[in-house]
Length: 452
Image (cartoon, rainbow, N blue to C red; front, side, top):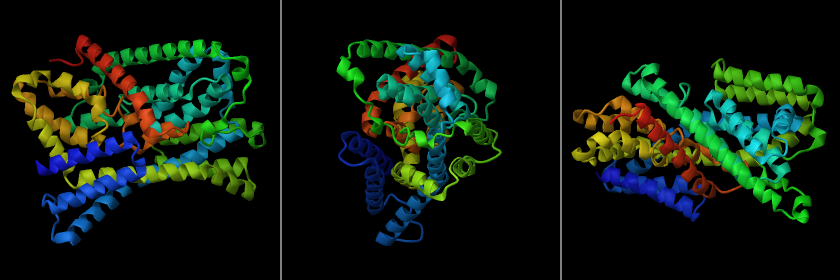
């Protein structure tokens, strides 16, 4: 219980410091788990192995940190080269046909623009990679939002909600974890979720229409001076327009390159990391053969890559300490033991309700391989279906909840695209994500996807 208590304190303190902006996300994700791990060591609740005392405690902290950083290394490298790849494609004008098509569809109608945002995010997340979805959607739509003077926060909110919803799909990590943990078939887990997913998509599209109508009213009220004011390109990281970098003759090649890179990732012909590395280098060599220009562009994207890489590695430290110290496992056991027998039959509903909030605390591996099986085992005696609980969990935990989770490094990319702080983004994102998740839970109860 002592280790579980330290784990809960670690998570709560981390979230509190990040939301209050008392410390930067990077500093918080490294400092808090490090200090709490040392406290756990002195409290005698860590398994120090053959070593003892301060040397053993520091040794454990070191191994936990190295393990955590190692677990996100490939993702971080992939992200860095993805930023170079997609930003260089944007500078070269590869996405201009997509932007032009979206502009033609949307015109100057904010409602059509917000709806187009959702549709592009649906297509962008077909590979199940949130980072890719963010980069594709923002690359295509941010210039339109800037041109129309629409609020970019609406763009990343709609992008986040959409990729969270599509993450329930069979190629998403959470559903595959459920199938593995419960030895269940695709039909048993996913097929009943199709109807709630359709309801969720309808809810997000309705929200897009609502946001678009509000933007139309706001834009109509702008003064002539406000309408004629220059657009501030600084709100978009790395996507400023430089006409000298456009390569109109290479648009077809660049689009084929983008499709090939994404196809290689989706088909698993190449892992995401080498796919983005090769894509970035080929793109630079073909579009910008001049070495000095290549170096200039890499430096241009470098500051954002560096900032995001430090946060990603910090998130790796956080999850590494919690997982390898045994805190996550202890927290799971404590939660299972806290469920009164009298409410056992309500467990599927309770799991569905806490899905999005739980994404702030538990990684998908910890939840689906540890916490959820423990919870379902504890209530199976009351006649509760384990798969019903699992499907309820998939309506929020690391699906709708993953784009705002501080445990996943890719979550920090969304606010970074428009230069806002992660806590400010979280505050706006959370009620929408939780609301859509609860709407889906109600529809799941009606359709029989989730049963009591």
